[in-house]
Image (cartoon, rainbow, N blue to C red; front, side):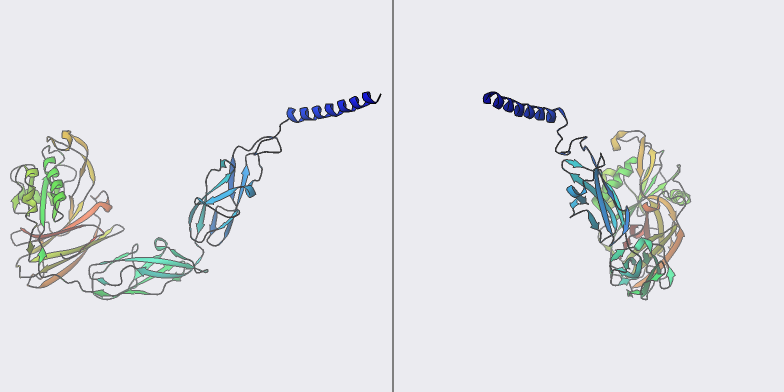
Length: 433
């Protein structure tokens, strides 16, 4: 009897154990990302308490699984790829911040939060330059300061006045002696005055000799790419030779190019003239030295130029100087444009021998002459003299891209031969050399 009861008890315990195990295995036993069973988390999303805040304000992030489970406390949150402690972050500089979260093996899609500057309570004007000379350009930077003392560069959002007159942008060309004072304003906040001393520009006793190539060309002229290629060789060999492309018979033709063409083109196209004095000998690519040799040594006159684009206005400063009297000298100031794309006929082997060159880049294209294209008289050409002129013109309507304009200035003698040259992209300063 006792044996039977013991066996019955053991059997009951065994049956209970088997049933219990069977019950566990028949259901969903769970996964590492969902130990309680049910659907597993296969993706996560990070959200912010705000997508735009001012500097100094905290942002709180929440991370949830695709099943709605809040897993923030078990996630790592990264701001600009750097992990933060906890789920809150306070930015100390303005900008756009990239946020993402990591949970176990999962990474969220990126979230972007804009942090803006707080209300500006003070302004300051700065400049990298501590002084200027006549003909230089001042570049101003405006610093905004909020109530917490945080500083931000807000130049593009502020208005700047120089000597009491508003300027376009943050650049100002100094064209006369006298210290300049800059003041910035934004949202009824005005900076203290910022002063820069201005000194006179001085000219050396002799000047580096430079040279000019005038390329008489047209998109229809199949042999003209030969001269274009030769100019590229010259530019690779020297930075003291400047080129002007005077077009005829195509959309880049203008009254200035035609006036030069009527004087200097006597033997057909292409024609390239050096210093308005001699033709560049054919084949031009084999005679690079003929051009570069003209830009060697020194001469007795020189130029400094500067230019500034102010909206649709172009301001050009040109100064001429002479170490010895040069009776009859004249000034020529021309506006050129680079990067004009137009089809070009090509009968040469240059540029791959393709005819036509459908996307040919036309550079140094004469667009406008501020002075007479053959020169205006310079008021003082006596020994040790220096004369400055400021030209303000609207950007020529023929110009496609004002950002690709350049200025070339010449001093020519009474016979229209080039004495010296200077050139620079608009917005750049070229001092006496």
